[in-house]
Length: 401
Image (tube, rainbow, N blue to C red; front, top):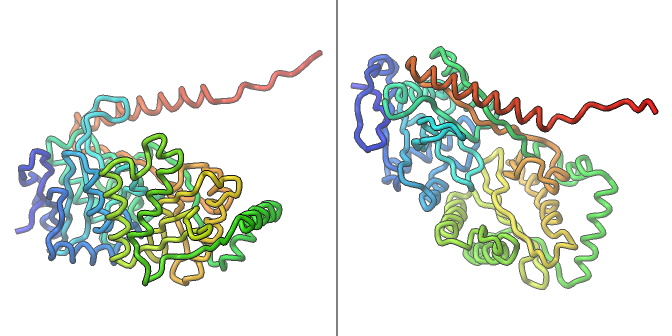
């Protein structure tokens, strides 16, 4: 018999009171620990990723395996099946505060190094998966007042499906935060894209910097090849990043065992899955700039970059980004998400397109929950209005003198 299993962060499972409603659709939601999957489930996960509604390396199994190095207590995995077939996966965590508001709720779990937070949903089953997730959370007394999801691609298939599922259940799906980050999306060749995106004066300036760098010694740009040691490239990246300001600030990946292990496992996992692309610029045989790309054709993600800050006058990081445009020549990559902060000066000058990433909140069922959601959203809107007034430019004053 099909059933819906409600979330219980204590580890106990309880059937949802409204299980029959979803049972009629053959949908089931289970809760599992965030642990290494067995062989059978690993195969299911990989099959789901291959048929996902949205290209997202951060929801794939090998990335999740590495992310367990950073997982706090209380993270669970929602497993959604329809007629026995896996159609959705989402890590979830209980939260005691909604921004600055003390309000219990449920959130998707996405750590600092995960640049999207959407669940992995099967193409064609997105609305069914979201409906099952929301209904299961409705039935769980410990789920809190609302579901808060961060890291959604605005108007992408996963976001659109959540809006549709929420509205079908008679509730809003409010966008509560939005950023735009640089991306490239083109059918142009690498050289044509560079010429079309970067103004001529800037291209000449960067050309002069490359010429000056070439005067310093033997300069070579190369991509990780099949016969090279990926471990050596990992070591070079970690050392290069730690030698810069991130190392001094204690935020470089190599500064803690957890983040170092996470990075190593991400790169090794992506390499084993055929999803890794690494590119570097060497000066006299030593890496002075390195970039890690994670591939999810037809897209890709610029995951991590580092450069030798002693050579910053030559902008090796910018030159590497220009060389990285050759990724477009592969034929199976038509876009790349920069994973950069909003308004990043370097990336924004090189990449012409933008991708909106949003956080959304959906109330869970029940009068008290709806009231709490409405109150929280009212406070959010009031705070946003105050911020807007504070940052609004002062009106111009006419000079009558």
